[in-house]
Length: 291
Image (tube, rainbow, N blue to C red):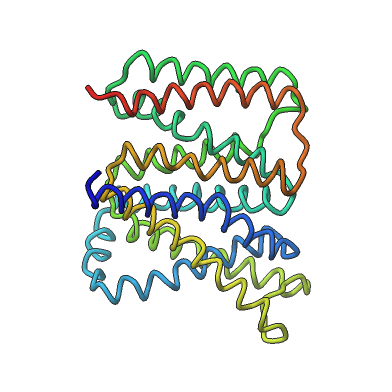
C-alpha cells in the first residue's frame, strides 16, 4: 500500500475515533453543563479558532468572494441552522445518556446522504446502493411502528447532517471557510443566548471558575481537530476508504453507550440495528467494488 494512502487511512481513522470516543468522553466530562451552553461555546470558540486559521493561511480574500455571492450566503445561513441543530442534538444525546440513539443516526447518515445525492444531485447509483437505502427505510419504519422505540435523536442527527452535507456538496465551498461563515453567523445568537442564561445564573463559564471555563473553550478544538484530521485523510486516501473508516465514529459511540455507560437497548432497537448493520455492510461492499 502506498504511504500516501496509508497516511490518509491513519488520519481518517484518528478523526473518526476522535468523533466516536474522545469527543464523547470530552462532552461526558462537561455533561453537568447544559446542552444549550455547550452548544453556545462550541459555536463561539469554533468561529474564534477559525479566525486564526484563516488569518494564518491568508484566506480572507476567499471569504470576501463568498460574501459577494448572495445565493451561496443564503444557503450557508441555512446550513448554519442545520449544523447548530445537529450539534445541540448530539450534545444532548451524550449528556442525557442517549449515545446509542445518536449512533443509530450516524450509522444511517452516509446511506441517507447517498439517497439525497441520487434524488437531488442525480448521482449515479446501482442495485447495492438501492438495497442499502431500502434497508434503512425498513429499519426506520420498523421503529416508527413502536413510537416508544423510535430514536428521534438519531433521526434528527441523521437528517440534519445529511441535508447539511448535501447543500455543502452542492455549493462547493471549502470546508473551513464555510464552517467559519456558519459559526460566525450563529455567534451573535449564541451570545444572546449566553447573556440570557447568565441573567438567570445558569452559566458555568466565567472568571469564577477558570478550570471549567478552559474546558468549555476546548469545545471549539473538539470540533476542528477531528474534522481537520478526517478531511486531510480523505484528501490522501480518497473518499471511498474514508467513507468506510467513518463508521468507526458511530461504532465507538455505540460501544461506549452500551458497554461503558450501560445504556438500555430494547429488542426493537436491536432488530433495527441489525438491519442497519446489514445495510452498512452492503454499502461498504459497494465502496470496495472495483468498477
